[in-house]
Image (cartoon, rainbow, N blue to C red):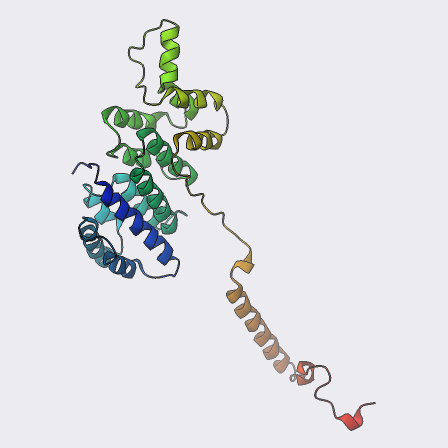
Length: 285
């Protein structure tokens, strides 16, 4: 079923749900228990509690939520379902915590009256920063109800050009700044466009051609006002991040040393005495 824009109340409850799950997921609670608890904290007059019931049924049968979200295409957007599917995948480093944080930010942007320009840049930046599949990701983005037919066609066209053409140039060609330049040069704008971005975004794209796309994203985020995309946390290979495990390893090493000493002829227990203990006072010099 085609996705349609929901009432603002639904997005308010969605943002609350994603925040609730993200915070409680840090306590290592199973997602099934979290959803069962959260269901009773949501506004009963919205459709979200019914959607959660369906998610719980799928979660109990397959252990996954994404298949149920795809089936509820009239409620969850394809991009929301795609993020959850990537977080539930066995491969990759995209976590459920990151997905929930992104979904929360996206829902809050909709509540604030987010624009198609800002929503596209936010969702596309999510794909880039988390190294998600461009083809599947852009296809999911194109089905968002915030985009009209012109936006959908342009996003789907973008799939074939991303990686081959500088993204800043692609934005410029789809901006009113490019249209104004063509008109000023008395050139035809037929078969050009669509001009989906404003002149301001076109100027930003010109200033970031040939640069790291992250600079373009940062500038767009400042001027379009969409939420900052959560940054993936770098992997920390330092073993000190798991001190409890390290203490267990140290205790095991100590036990192994004791066993080796016992096999060699006994254990000298005097080395375990604290300083000044275990001596016979009258024999001390």
